[in-house]
Image (cartoon, rainbow, N blue to C red; front, side):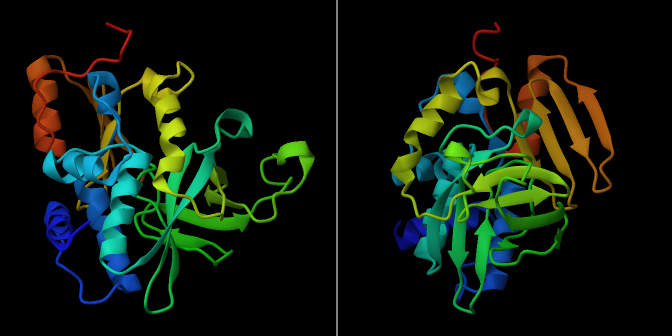
Length: 276
């Protein structure tokens, strides 16, 4: 990513070019990203190709003013942070599903980001409802965030009853929790963006993937609330957790919601593939 592309990305999220890659700057950039770039899987259901290459990600997120899911959002954001002078490492994670079962390898992409003032942070703009600010990577106690109370802990057989291959404890892996609920298991080994191609393909095509079975478009508002459009259902989740739900009837209402609420211009309403 060159300096002009980085400046265009910063304008996309409403941020100024920082003087130094500090922890405070990282906090601001993550929050602005969550407020302006939607977490969405519309490409899957619009028949659009998902390509995990930096230029294609920038074309989508910055040029087309779209969002994406974890591989796209954290892939693009990681490239921006690296250009701004942050030390960025791509990390693979497996998401906890029903009954504490872990998902596929390369199920999720997250970022480990180090700053010039000595911060070491878990940064994630691609998990949907998650922390608004980076989480301290080395902190093992509770971390209060507008998105809830988070913990980053060493994984083991006592974590939701899950063991590694052969029943051994995965001492180097970390579990990320929101309250008492396990979110995902994070590997600490560095990865590259190309490692996640198979995971992105599986989530876009497998009937077992929730991304292939449903529509989602979501972001945080400047008031700290979350707005979500799932098909034709619009949900406003307030800071206290209460929800207001409304159904959009016409195609015009749906397209207007994508445009007005998420800044996404579409020429047709996305429908779950195979559900038409």
